[in-house]
Image (cartoon, rainbow, N blue to C red):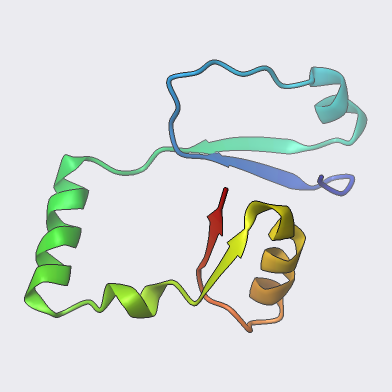
Length: 89
């Protein structure tokens, strides 16, 4: 769900193809972008930072919620009551 003149960012990668309704995008004047901004080097650096204790991974995720509560997740982030919410299927 996205408001009129809103923006949708598709994040991550999947091997499955998907379809997007162009009439929905045009009808609501949406901006659609994609984000795929990591490499194996990114993972290596993250693992090194966590392993060295410089980054505490358990502090990064502030909340874990079932996917059915996605709207609550956005509300928490927008209210600055959460930093990173992990959605669990």
